[in-house]
Image (cartoon, rainbow, N blue to C red; front, side, top):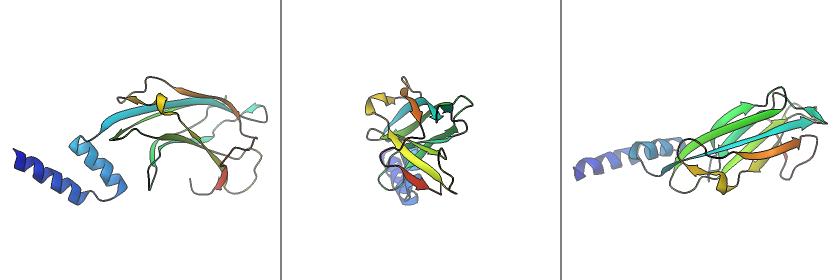
Length: 150
């Protein structure tokens, strides 16, 4: 029995070299624990609802961030995203917001909101939702950048 497990472990490591494949090997071997998170809020642009704004919920990784969910704000500017990931250590979730409020360029303004770790729970379904409140996209945010590939 031990030999079969050792062989399975070696094969999983041999075939799982990239970041995406490392996730696959964690899932196959059951390493780590499933963790989940949810975030919600409302986006406005100069006092009006910011509809159809692209939002991406990521797990912050060392090399490449892992997308957990992608969505868009509704006609009232409201949104809710949730996602889960199997990880050995606590996940480090963040929300990226891509918009063109007060911007006429070809690309998008982008800023990131880090989600506090106390909103991460064990299991595949979030128990609590981190509410970012109402954000005016006309404002400038710390770390904001221009993003053409999102």
